[in-house]
Length: 78
Image 1 (cartoon, helix red, strand yellow):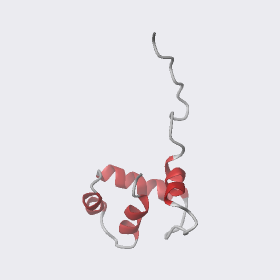
Image 2 (cartoon, one colour):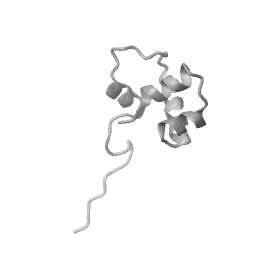
Image 3 (cartoon, helix red, strand yellow):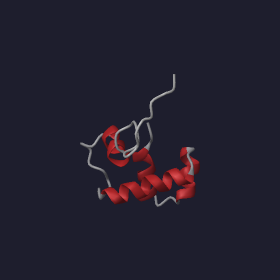
């Protein structure tokens, strides 16, 4: 599971730059930037309400796991 809440906390409350958040969390800068952009597009306020679990927050940001929307799963060859 991604540490979405911790990434957002560091960036929002700590005013830590994206590069430093990425280094601290051990993830790519592009991933941190993507998390922040998705959160802002979602329109939630910081801090995230306690009734929203980490799994629910991740599902809201990234959608359900599985096949990408608009893509068909091709049949596998014999």
